[in-house]
Image (cartoon, rainbow, N blue to C red):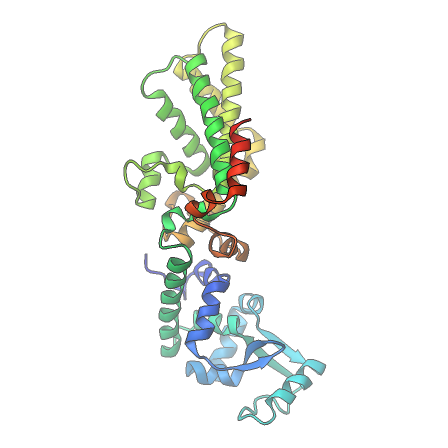
Length: 337
């Protein structure tokens, strides 16, 4: 879907939190700047020239988006730091701030941040377009071109998937043993779990992610969501057993659904559900360009740690993980429990 960086703080921050995209951007955009304390920085005069806007325009954005720009590296130099910076500026063509007692300085991140905000600058518009292309290229390269299964690059995915499979077996065994089932029972209860956690049934979820009809949904879920599903399955299996034994008979499907409604309202699950919804909605929009409309209120910017988790050096394709003897040993221990 088309992204309007000038309007979405989440989309802006998702780029700025992606250090792999920033590395490529700094290498290929050639914005200039000065090296200060080991990083590329820009004076306001340089930013004015870069984006072909007035000093007053820059000041307006510094006022209207102060917190965002400061969090991404904008700072005001004073005292000793300012003196050190003036020393670096001497001998260059830049004379901004040489007689002042305070000087605003933009980090590379802050310069990109400002470029994603400026609506009255043609250079900023071109930069936004190039940035989006860089992000797509980096994502495709580091994820191996398979963002639909980017969840599987998380080193926790395999363990979570295997544990969930074990709990699912307990869940289906409990349905068989303690509920009057029909051919729709398993799908019905599975959808109840999905709807409870992320407000979508299986068909709706597949549509959002544009998955093939035969795709196993759980192969696309993040480890935290799989863990929560496993908790549901284990807990519901226990509740079904307790209720059936108390009555001395199998539960009707209506009774089982009533039990489920009571189970999902337990306060224990509230923070876990909030976390799962936030991670699913935010990560899918960022990594998969997939919007869960029913979870739109939970969308946040993806933290820097998640980019390392799914795109970084520790992230590996499922095939690579399955070829690792240490990973296989862990999976075998889990399987043998």
